[in-house]
Image: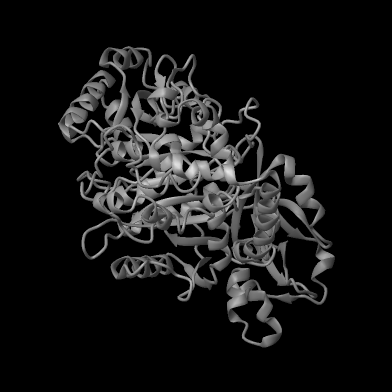
Length: 607
């Protein structure tokens, strides 16, 4: 029955392929909105006739041309939609947009159907979801809990199953905190990956459009259509094509150590985090405890430093001409910018750079960071008693992320013992969105947490053999360039993305070459050989030349035959290079060889 139809993208597309009419889906969307009966979710809802008209224009079902064919979505009301008001939750600021925001156009071109515009903390300043002059939306799981902000309506709409996905924005955590509070996925992409053209800024240098969905796979599918380079956005970046490949079998995960882990006395939240760490270890993750003090120091700068002045620039005219138009809590926060001088801005930049010098080496020492998305839960009553303190504490694990130029995904995990949703955020440096998604997806599949407030079951992720896009080259790494090993950074720093693990055809021999550190293997084609473990990565063609410059003699890049018959570019060794080398073919791969070593002489090879 249609009223039981899951709106996960894969399931909806399967129904369309079987003959479901998108007009029926549009009817079901509006029926679900009526049943939800929450006037706080939407600030503007398109007439049903408008969405019917959009559905009729889709043409025949074709995912090659329209990968989001017939998929309903909503956007936060600080993002423009042609002909609709943009309020940023401030009626006096409202204007009618004369065109879609760049990202909205991309999604509509991909076949997605826009249903409406959702409520938010005014001017996207808040993590609580109740700083709006309109009635705030109710948390989808427990109405006593705050919905989370600033993208409150966007998150609740997805968690209730009203639409397949939604757009939020994320400066300090607004695309992640509401996801945690409503038990859904919140994808915060690399800054600049999604255009901000047509988006009301909060902090223009730190803003990104974010994506809410019920599954990591859905969020990544949307990102594939949304991450289009926009030359008109001065902060846009051309990023690697998003690919949801297989997760790495072994990886290092940095977490806050016991001394710097903060849950503000919430023992159940602490226990839930420990449970998730066990799940990550079961997936192949090696837990590395880090002193998170520098990350917290960065986080404090976002609201206590000169970055508040960026928010001030957006509402300066209103503050001068009509200050009562602003929400009192937002007004109190943004007016602190008047206390900063231009010199303070530069002092803030200098301090941030100093903190980066401490934090970035910690990040470089692991493959990912994993943090609780939120440290604890707060109720609506808590915010009535203290409108600022809980908001600040909710940003404990989110405020530093954009200042350090990280990408991440908040993923629902095993619920707490009291039934409240569990959530962690997987983080990595910019351009590593695909690697983060692979791990986050595997974690969601393992935990199988409820999908928001729905009773739908999480669909299994089907991953074929991912391939590089036309502007990328696939590279097979067989040694020190593999994930977690000493030279992997030479790939990741150039925007390379992990695709999958594989094996060569059974015609290669592997040698441990003299010299080091870093210690390296040499792969040689030999009919007496065997299949050798490897990893396939993609690297932008524009970076391939620079990558080649770092490959020393006797190594080079040649064409390798894989076990499945495919050919891929990868590391090879000249025959002269194996003189004095140790034949380690019988180990079947470099990692197996490293695991066999136990002498101090070789201990660096394991790092």
